[in-house]
Length: 323
Image (cartoon, rainbow, N blue to C red; front, side):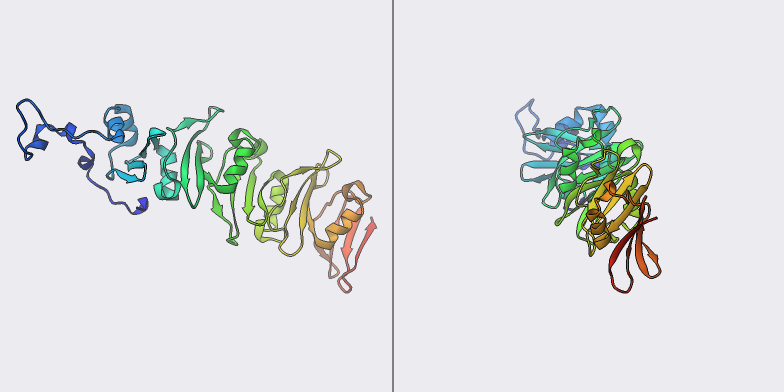
């Protein structure tokens, strides 16, 4: 049942008969003197009604309890309770529960495997979820600065491999989202030194991260819908231990963004990129690129520290020259 369409049910409907008193059994068959028929609590009811702090945290029930195979779950004003034999009764609440609802609730993310946890850095909070066929295992992470954001699929696998929120990507700043072209998905993250990072995935390229100034240059040319397409590498350290670069699939021709402290971050692609490679890239006389591709007399030119590469507008021939 889609949680977004669930109606509100009177809270009294979720009150166990054991709490309702003798009046609840008035219409039942007579019992022997001194005995009152009582209905056993479910694990969710037992935790909810025996934990005053939890009741205040979650508020009143807004739906009856549901069962899906071995999982039971119930929605409350400000959160959810889940039960499986393996996990016991677990809860989500507050901003994480609100994001859970926005994503699609139980139908999309499944049950939480534990109560809300404190992140290792002591700043954030998170819940892990069983997920669904559409997502696989999923997570929602929260900080005051980023809000609550969901991560799942190959991007979550990548983020986990890089150290979760204590790795170089930091906390997610966006929930996993389909790309504009419909071919992939992405998340944005805080990134190293708070400079921003993104992880983009497609079936063809897999998941890779782009960060800092290289990410800014890629974003300026249109993210994955621009000439560069999807990243095919994470950020790499150049052989000179000075520069950094990412390679990209390209919409028509493969490309790259190169950065150095002196030149900044700039992109190039196709035959211009291949010609620069033939000239030993940044180790050759041209050095690092100092411009993106731009038109010169009808041709396409990329400027470098030591000269330029030009594609002839008439012949398509590639030439290079020093300044």
